[in-house]
Length: 364
Image 1 (cartoon, one colour):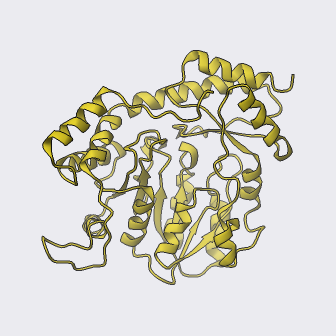
Image 2 (image 1 turned 90 degrees about the vertical axis):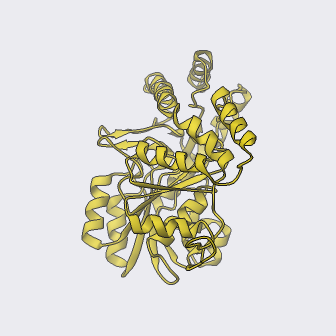
């Protein structure tokens, strides 16, 4: 079976981890500081605060933007549940805007409709889904008009670009995940980016029990610190990220060329001004056909996956909160049609050739 994800672990990661183990400094320290500095520089942000995972990065990002109990935060329902759960962690209310059916990302048009309807929206979390940035010109125009805090959920978008500017450098804060299957990973881990020095200081308190100095705690904080062990892996992975993005892009382009004449799948849309980093290569298959198509792939040795088969507000917990079906029809439709195929850099030419051959043979 060709797996849909395959984390790359090479000698550089092992050597740096061994270096940390030999140092006996396993918790946060100089490796975390190096990783923060390197990732901030790579992403075009002034400050980076490493955290335990992407979820805690999102929670910290919301808190550093001043989101509190009773506030409203608009986001997309077509994402991993951490996006909206982090809003609930703050005691705030998630409000959902629909997606652009071409990109799977939040629709600026739908977002503005929500902003006109909902008064006193504190923040908006956009998600650069599957490795493609949102329409940032339109989003930033809305930010200026409606005066909300902008948080980028870039957990799937390491190195993605919009008009030459990297994901994570547009908003008041941004959150990344380094989960094991991401484009670069630390096993578990996350990071928050910001260009605001005060927000950086506050975030460092949030992730370290509220500490201000050695034994003084001035705000309510959490234990969201990344370890030197995880950071060491991240340092090595960041150095190879551009190479891996190129490989993912090459694989995606190979698929696009092979599948363009097929009438039963719709390949990913990439706007001209965007650099898609293909955390996932996600196609659309008609809802009634999807299960049959996926079973065929698996029977023929090709891994595949559905990452969001239900919009967030139709999850059981959110139903209890009173959310109803029909809020975002484009997102609900996408949840019934999206299928992700292997695109990771560990795929060989024979792997991609097999995937193409199997998919082309589906209707036969």
